[in-house]
Amino acid sequence: MKKRSSSFTVIGLLFIGIGLTLVDDNMYLRYGFLLVGTAFLLYSIFTMIKNR
Image (cartoon, rainbow, N blue to C red; front, side, top):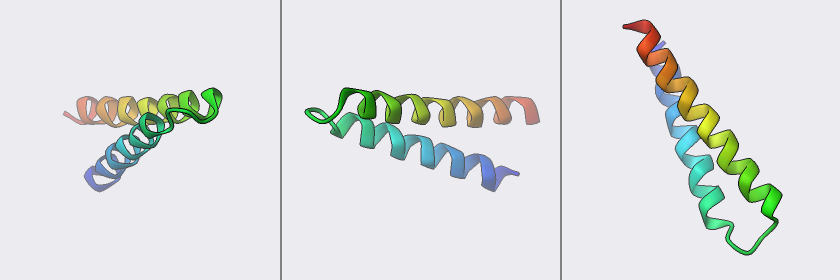
C-alpha cells in the first residue's frame, strides 16, 4: 500500500508541475491539471494519515 500512496504523490506532483507550466494555454486545462494534482496529493496524504 505504501508503494501505491507514493505513486499517487508522484502523479500529483507531476500534474501540478504540468499545470504550473501551462501559463498561456487554455485556462480550463491549466486549472484542471492543478485540481487533479491537488486531488491526488490530498488522497495520498489522507491514506498516509489513515494507515497510521
